[in-house]
Image: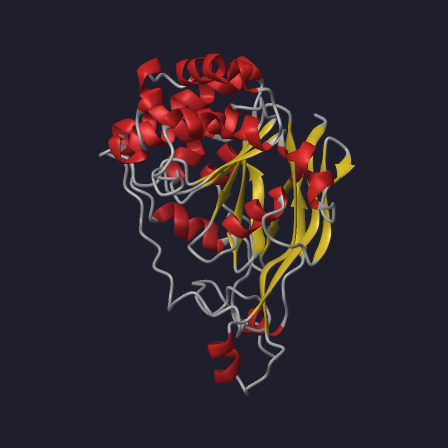
Length: 335
């Protein structure tokens, strides 16, 4: 499959806030590495899942792709064109083809604008003629299953599910080829989550959308994504076909996340894997394998050396000295 989006060795850094710089040796040049050399491809019509705990860098990665945060290194190519480093004016036509759905369905909508204004605002921003905006509003609301009279409502008059549908309609306004969906089911009832996911799947089938889905919800990932990347402290620790990773995770972090996922089958039993401690600060990354401070399989070599990237068949990648599901001796190998 030809990649629509290609990300290679992407890095994003932020300068630490003044209070933190004062706390850490009063150094004015403290930087936080939020995304550390990640690479991914998304094909036409594919849904790619991005999973990890809060603070892992998922949303930062999505924002970097669309140009909302600066990139410190690496390349982003969309439809073959390198797009990181483009000026605001040069990026404008690219943004017609990449849309972002933000996490808070109501908070991401301006409370001062009607649904009509919200849905058609992309046309104004990109200089499209006013003549057909009412007709386009009706078309877009119809695509997401909302009545035409919702055009006169304000965000506070919408339920969470209705607000999310408005967000989807707004994202679809310019007929994008790629949608970056940041927690599209967050804060919604389970039944409404299903409706939104079914809507996205329907639109994907109808217009061939590609979707990068950022989510904590592993059930969502399993049922709607083709491939998935597991992110920890700004790095991918495992990527591959969704079903393969769910069936047999290689990385201990992936296994821990899956063990904590609610199992819909009441007869199924799985042992919960408890991770030690908390997620380390990005300002004080552990040496060696950055996951070793919480890992239930960590040995002395994990403290000393970062694991190399292992590539299996079908582009499955992981970074672990002692991957799960393989015959490895995990006895302490200290000298």
